[in-house]
Length: 178
Image 1 (cartoon, helix red, strand yellow):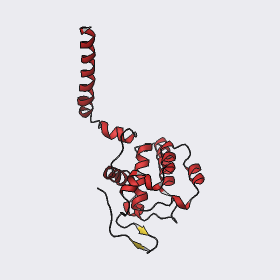
Image 2 (image 1 turned 135 degrees about the vertical axis):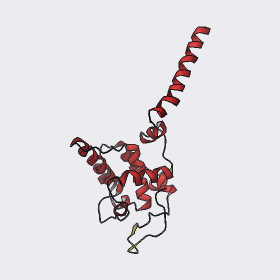
Image 3 (image 1 turned 90 degrees about the vertical axis):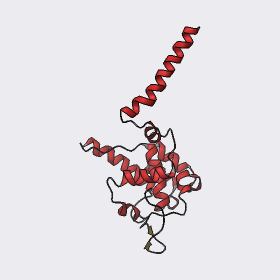
Image 4 (image 1 turned 180 degrees about the horizontal axis):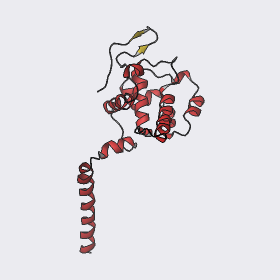
């Protein structure tokens, strides 16, 4: 009995030590991976930083904040197609870090809050068709706008320079990259 208990404790201790010491030595951030795969939620500040970091790798932030309903579909659709575009780009030899569904869910909420959410201007079934196959974004689409955690936390904030259609002027106050 004591040998079995001792063996179990030794195995658990080895696993704990392995999980706490080995990943940092290999440069692996377990929490970042857990968040990217939807196992742990992004904080609002982390989501804003993620959106700016990942999206400005390909787009100028000024272009992102000037995006409006006349430029294209809501961010939930645009981000789905960015994910697909990255997949195609990587198949053609360029290397761009693929987006996970959890990253896209966080990123969409950030841009919806800081630039504008135009999902209400579209039929829900049309949006669902356009993002078909993306479980993360389809799940987000089912959450009422006022119940989305990151979007709700950023309510009333705008990205510096975000286009405001009613006033035809860029926003001057608001949130930026944290």
